[in-house]
Amino acid sequence: MSPASPVSPASPFLDLPPLGAARFAAIEDRVAALLHTRADVIVMQGEALLPLEAAIRGAVRPGSTALNVVTGPYGQTFGGWLRSCGAEVVDLAVPFTGAVTAAQVAEALTARPEIDFVSLVHAEAATGNTNPVAEIAEVVRDHGALLMLDAVASVAAEPLYTDAWGVDLCVIGGQKAMGGPAGVSAVSVSDRAWERITANPAAPRRSYLSLLDWKERWTDAGRSVLPHAPAQLEMLALEACLDRIEADTLDATVARHRAAAAALRAGVRTLGSLSPYVVDDAAAAPVATTLLTPFSLDATTLAAALAARSLPVQSGGGALATTMLRVNHYGPHASLETVLSVLTALAEHAPGDEGFLTAAEKAWAEAIGD
Image 1 (cartoon, one colour):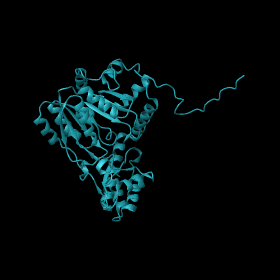
Image 2 (cartoon, helix red, strand yellow):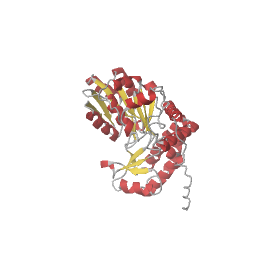
Image 3 (tube, helix red, strand yellow):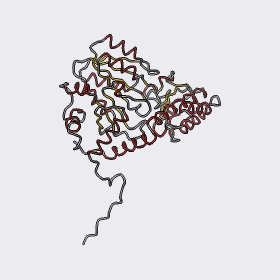
Image 4 (tube, one colour):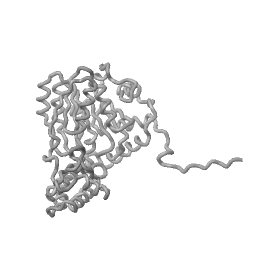
């Protein structure tokens, strides 16, 4: 007689009840509320590059003309996807140290009246800048083009009014200001965007990139039967993010991110040994602050030293790797404690004027409304 097989210990990550269609749909509805939209919202099982590429490949048809606003690396990525869809792409590139203006977008649209699609990043965490979406969206709407917005780094860190602004495709991810996982994302799709996607013969079908498959098999079918097995852990984590934001309130969450950026920038300016990469405060993203290090200090080495102390710091990418420091004060790190800890560590490696902590605390209080 063989011995009984040992029973595996219970695990909160493995022994989970099924995630049904009703709960999945309820999470989508809560994401829609976060985006201030009544449009269809599709939660997708992958990092936010999935719905970003799906939105472009669904809405952009061969032979069309697209305006691609480039204020950082993600704008560069979108340009490649747009060209691979067969579109003629007009790149509107501005220095990564600031933001694009609505006037610049209007000028580009006037010069090319045939433009029918505009891609824009709200906040570029990699460069630390943010764009004035409300003003830009008004210009795009008046022109008649569709607007796709990458709000992955801005959702829960900045105001985001998808319907009021007229954003047709709004993509978010859970891994930044929402404080959640990278493996789940979402896109809201306006009626105008659905019309464009449905009329596009090149839109993906029977594909992981197909928004139309989601529409037909899930949204239009009453969201009663999931078309796939959901990524349960990621969905539960997304639900937990929404719980936390709702408990704290979205306004308070946005205020914390704004205060973290203001405090860090004030502290750095007072310290004086480093300087903000994005010069104008109005163009600075609340989700992350990028800093230029002095020539005598390698940013890669400094980032490694701070990261070893569990501080949310990394070096810049590409050509900026040795001269840019990126402080990710988002999610749970959108706090005065994190800002003061980062500033204290920076002062140890790049000493400067005293009073930087006081300046940071004052800026935090002013931004948070205390």
